[in-house]
Length: 105
DNA sequence: AGGTTGACCAAAT
DNA sequence: AATTTGGCCAACC
Image (tube, rainbow, N blue to C red; front, side, top):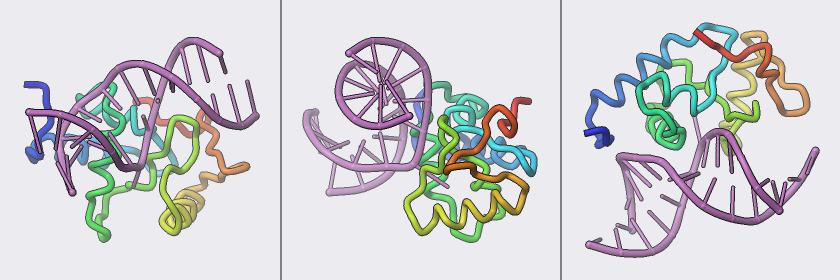
């Protein structure tokens, strides 16, 4: 199978990877998908994140797009920016310095 | 069933 | 540097 169908096993794989991202670091949607075992399924990562409960303890804010930009619509983008800054990740002209903060295990 | 829609991405223009 | 293009893949009409 290799296909994703609302099976919780797939979702928990995304969540497991998400939980491992260290404080003060970020990954891209594509990175998250690949680490979860779904290479080239960046949009799938976005769908999983979108469905996370609003009160999740998972570090959803550590996931940004491949250009180092926040991919959320306002007003959630503002919350993500705040959370990142709380961890010492500043956005310079709307961008995270991927060379400095991208997590590579 | 089949078309459209995204918290996407890399390569080409 | 900014846009466009083609690929991606499950959810949702």
